[in-house]
Structures are given as C-alpha cells and as structure tokens.
Length: 382
Image (cartoon, rainbow, N blue to C red; front, side):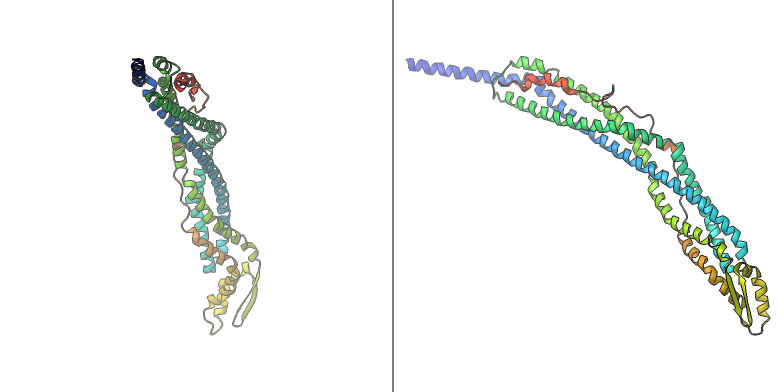
C-alpha cells in the first residue's frame, strides 16, 4: 500500500512538473521582445553597416576631390607658363619670318611653326587655362575641398568608428537575445522572474531600437546627400586626368621649338661661305638672307651653271638646319592641338554641407539605454 502511494505521489509530481514546463513554453510566446526585438535589432545592425559604408565612400570622394583640385591647380600653372611660352615664341617666329623669307624652305618651317603656335594657343591653351582658372578661383571648389578635408573628414572617420563598434555590439546583444529566447522556448532553465515580469521589463526594447534606427537612417540620409554631391563634383572634374596627359604630350615639343627659335639670333651672326663655280664670297648669315636674290642673279651670269637657287641656298640651309630640323620634328605631335574641356561650374556646387557631426543634435544615437531594458531577458535563467 505504501509502495503504491509512493508511486502515485511521484507520478503526480512528474505530471505537475510537465504541466509547469508546458505552461512555461507557452508563456514565453507572450514575451513581446522575443517576437519583435530580433528583427528590430537586425535592421539596426544593417543601418550601422550602411552608415559605415557610406562614410568610407565619403572619405574616398573627399580624397578624390583633393586629388582633382590639386590636379586643376597644377594644370592651371602649367597652362599659364605654356600660354606665355607660346606667345613669346610666336613673336620671335613672326620677327624672323621676314628675315628668312628669301629662302623658302626656311620660311615655310618658320611660318608653319608660327601658325601652329598661334592656333594651339588661341584655340587650346588659352581657353583651357581660363577654364582651369574659373574652376580654381570662381567655383569655390578649392575652399570646399579644404573645408571637407579639415572639418568634415575627421567627423566622418569618427562616424565610421562609432558605426563599426555599435554594429559589433548590437550583433553581440542580438546573439544573446536569441539565445535567451531559445532557452525560454525550450523551457531549459529555471527562471529568475516570472514571464510577465520579463515581458513587462523588455516591452520597450523594440521601440527603443526602432527609434535609434530611425535616427541613424536620418543621419545616413545626410551622408548620402553629401556623397552624391561629391560624386557629381568629381565626375565634373574627371577631365583633369585626360587634360593633364594632353598637356604632358605637348609640353616637351613646345619647349623644344621655343628653345630652337631662341638660337636663331646667334645663328644670324654666324659666317658662311657661298661658293658656286667661280663665285666665292663669305657673308654673315643675316646678310646672306638679304643678298640671296642678288647672289643668284650674279651666279646666273656665269655660263653653264645650273640649279643656282639650290646651290646658293645650300650653305644657308645647312646652318639653319640646327633649328629647322628640330622644329619640324617637334611640330608633328602638336597637330592634334589641345582639347578644351567643357565644365559647368554649377556641377561643382555640392550645396550646403549637411550636418554630419556624430555628436551633434542630428547625430548618432547612444544605445546605452537599451542595456537595462534587456537585462531581465538576458538574465532570465538562474
């Protein structure tokens, strides 16, 4: 009889325990946080990651803008020097063309060089220089770049650090929430508090997270507007790399030609000898140019002499080859000229810089208030 009573008591105890566990398993479904919080936290983590990614993009765009602005300043300086060099060299060519005109082979090279320098200057270098100057001084892009680099970039870097830290911390909290909810669902632990107490204590958790995510997404919107403006400005300045290459391609030929024409003055004082048949006289080169017509007439009076002009011009051309040959070679790459970029200054206006101070009134939320709300759920099991 006692044995039967003992068995009955044990059975009742097991049955009561089973009912309690079933009740616990069903009751956990009433913990609102277990149903809504994981999804809210996943959205919050995603928002932090987006803020970090957009911040990295902004820093890349700020660095790219700095490179583009520096490129424009260098282009402007190069074009200013080149514009003056072309103008000075063309004046020299135009001064020497009348002097060398009696020898057509020399005149043609000098005339071609003068025309080429004039065209490349008026149709390419000068307008390109004006464009670069407008960008550098009138668009405000230089001042904007400095402001971005000095004031905005450090704030964005702080934002990235905060976003990465919070994404990791919220991920860890999410893992703990999921673990606690699984234990409660499996009724695999003894509780520190009743389900009702846990549910009441964690009721505000999802709302807090969603509110933080909303603030984060507002900040992300400011980041996106800044990034879009920077992308637009950098796209407008994308021509700088190609223009810099064009300038590099013509810089040396122009310098070579300018250097060659500068030698003409000293060459004109050089002595040459014109010897054809019985005619033999020495002249300064500048005098030979002046008298070449008369020399040809005199030599033509000598019987049996052929190709008089060619023979008279030969010693003149031999000396002038020192400048005409390098000029002719250097003119070839200048034929394509310089393409003038078309840039709208309005495309460089990124508008009013949005507030991206992570600690400002429109900055990033502090999730510290979430910890005490989650404590009862995290510590639900004894």
